[in-house]
Image (cartoon, rainbow, N blue to C red):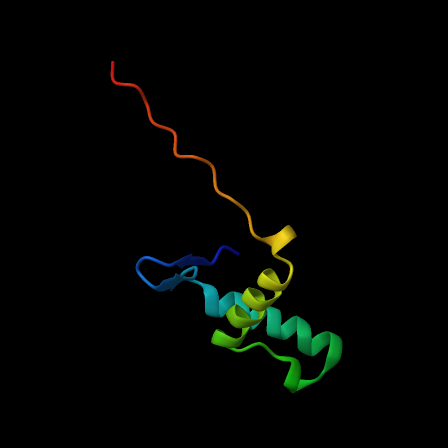
Length: 73
């Protein structure tokens, strides 16, 4: 699942079906642990991912490719 942080616009873009995907994750959590406290919230899931990526920035922060520019013909 791709979540995009835009620091210029100060927005976080999630997939149109983010809530459905989160519900599926929570269903799996309940099947495995049967512990309501482990369920992910809409914002909590993003925050958890962000903190984990920053804590492991050497592995998780990925530099994008330089934009490709077609030469004019």
